[in-house]
Amino acid sequence: MSYSLSHKDHQATLKLSNNKRYDLFLKKAAQFGEIWSLANDEGWVTISSEEGENCLPVWPHPDYAKEWCNGEWSDCEPKAVALDVWLERWTPGLEQDETLLVVFPNLKEEALLVDPYELDEGLRAELQDV
Image 1 (cartoon, rainbow, N blue to C red):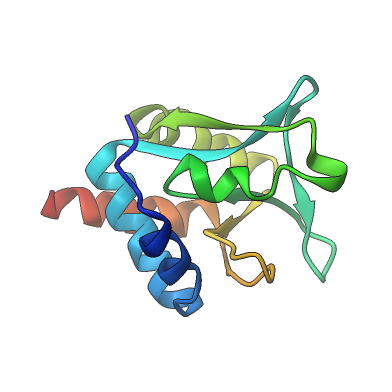
Image 2 (cartoon, rainbow, N blue to C red; image 1 turned 45 degrees about the vertical axis):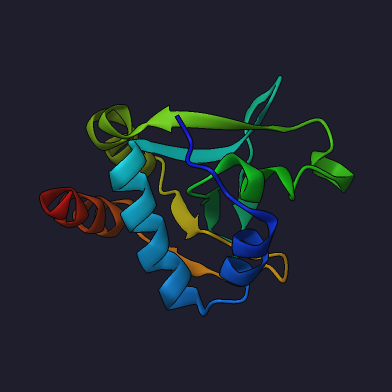
């Protein structure tokens, strides 16, 4: 279940630095127990980094993901993954598939790019504080 997000908070959050959005992502994912990405009938949406690496964008709330549902992604919808499922199955699967994570990208396509186990460590550390 997502948290309530006002338009003002939404806009202010997108202006935060990559590191601050990353920290907020960890906090919200741990607190509400879900990670959001985009999917369509063909599956989960991935993008390529500047270095050509396969990457999965993730957000802490569906409203942030929904903003990316246009252009070539107009057929996509935000979809949640429960945090316990993420930690148990997605982290090893993403690592095996050599997929990096684009954590909480803003509309300028700015975000931290992290390894699945790096995100896993951050999430587990944050869960200790919840």
